[in-house]
Structures are given as structure tokens and as C-alpha cells.
Image 1 (cartoon, protein in one colour):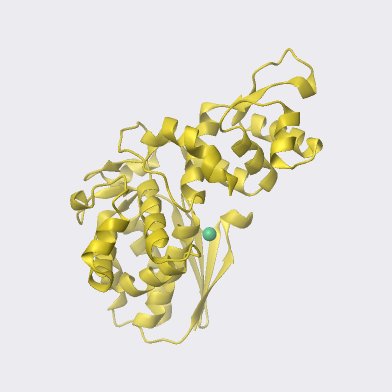
Image 2 (cartoon, protein in one colour):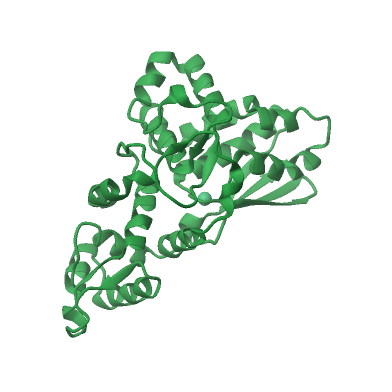
Length: 311
Ligand SMILES: [Zn+2]
């Protein structure tokens, strides 16, 4: 959709937010930036807000221009602007002018959020150069990325995989077991893989993780324990905490059923497909016939993503 095109200018400006940081400790997770997560869900939970924010990506606009560009009624645009201003994501650049003639633009927070949205929305992710930023960066452990790439090279051939990830902002040769990769870079990698091997539905990413998850060391450590499935599922947050330096996973189990509540940093369609696949892979590894259903998603307005595992 329009998003990919409209975002380009912004992502160039804030592209430095995607970067790799080696051997960083997971505990630097506890600093600031918590607001970005809530802003993210605030924006994606309303199509109006998202369209207005997106429309401001390239240049400031007056409400009428926004209405024209977004196909929204002016009243909806005004309300979205009010809400986004209240959140500090957009600002009025000409407060002295009367209501509908006022010019609105993105704040730096709004631009940063758009860059995140961009990473999560565009099917083909633009190449982002590695850089450095201050503050907290959500990251994932390199070991699962190493295993996924290994698995792919074995099943799809080295050349195809290397070609697919050529535009990746991270040098794959630098990713090791204990490298921590920004979650943006991970999301970008998944999009590149879906682009090359999938059809855009993220079914490929889901299958990939379902098949490869049992090779992830921290997953394997739990999967191979001789404990009942319910007990195993209850240990999922241990794996989550080891693999991710951010977010939260809550598990509720009932008889032959578990509800996994994810409070993830960047639930892009690819990341959601990844978790979906990981749970399916767990069932398959244990030889259990069951199914995993995505019951809630931040992308459809919930405050978290939820997967129901039944067997
Ligand atoms: Zn989701």
C-alpha cells in the first residue's frame, strides 16, 4: 500500500535506529523508551490515526489536504490530529492560524514511530545502514538467527539464502551465538526471507520457524525434557527471557490448552508469524496432534498478541 512509498523519507532520517550491537547484555532493556511501545499500539489500533500519521510522513499538511490524501472525513482527521497531538506524535506548526487552516507536522517521536511502523508494514524492507543510537534498543539473541540461516542454507541452498539476505542491514558473518541483534534488524531479515521464499502471507516465515525452532539451543534445552506438555508450555517464558531482552510472555494453562499472551516490542506480521510457527513446531517436535490459533493481535487493536495452543 501507500505506506511503503510515503515512508521512505522518514526511514532515511531515522534509519540509524536499526543496528547491531555485539555482546551487549540483555539487562540494558530496562531503560526508557517504554512509551514507544504504547505509542505503537495507540497508532495501529486506529486506522484513522495511522493513515493521518503516515500522510504526514513527507511533509506537513493542513487538515483538508490530509482528508483528501487519506480518504477520511475531515471530522475524523481532526479527531486523529487531536489524539496524535495529545500523544506528542504530531504538532501544530501554525498555532496562530484558525482551526482548519492550521499546518500539522510530525514531531521527532512521531517520525521515530513511523520508522518502526515502516519496518513493520513494508513487505520489502528498504536497506537500512547500521548505525548507533543512544537509549534502549530491543534485541534478540543471535543463536536463533544463526540456526534459522543454517537450516535455510541446508534446505534452500547457500546461494539462494545469501542472495535473499544481501540487502540486510546486518552482516550475517558477524552474527554469532552471543551476538544480540536489534529486533528491527530481525524483523527486516524475516521480511527479506518472506520476500524471497514466500508469497507475502508470512506463511513461509511461520513454516520456517516451525521447522527450525527445535534447533535453537534454548528451545531444545526445554523441548527435550521428559516432562508433560503442559509443564513444558509453562516453561516457555524461560526461553523467551533468554532469547529476547524485551517484552513479556505470560502463559495460562488449562486441560490440553494453553494461552500465550505476548507483549512484544514490534509485532510485525512476520514476528507474529514467527511465534505462531514456533508454537506449532513445539507440538510437532513432541509428536502431538494439535493446533495453534492466533486469537488476539496488537495489529487488530488488542493491547497484546495472543496464541491459543490446543492439543
Ligand atoms: Zn500479533
